Length: 192
Image (cartoon, rainbow, N blue to C red):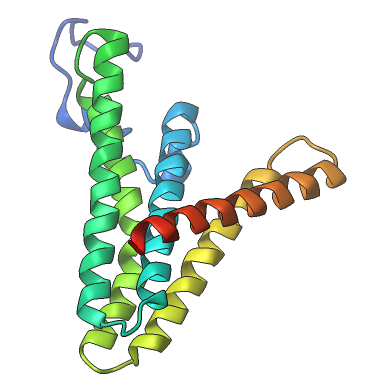
């Protein structure tokens, strides 16, 4: 506690103090590396999932906007809930207790980051649903959004590393290759 604080050590903390860190934006989570790692990891999972769903719908014979929108919403929501439950169970297994208020709120922030990956594609598919965009155009733009998102995340991760320029280039090439493998596998899984 700060010097001069008259509260006792056992006094309940205010809601703002308990949940202050959890209300932080992703940039503020960087001060807490484990939370920032979880935030990025879940965004990557959700982005790959969304990309695979859009690819599978796009590869279908007659893509329909309502099917694409529902598949995207359910797919990304499903991977987000799975990640959230996984985090809670992992915490319980390691610490033998449920996460406290701050830890729980951080996990909610991570989940919100995952869900946010479908905002732009969801809007595009809704526009296609209401006839503002052609479904093929909406799907192409969704693909570009997801691929650009993965590219930016990969580039930022490699750029922040302490590798030499050629090691950074090699790491980025490996990330792209592995990303293509993941997209291929997920597309194959979603197309059956």
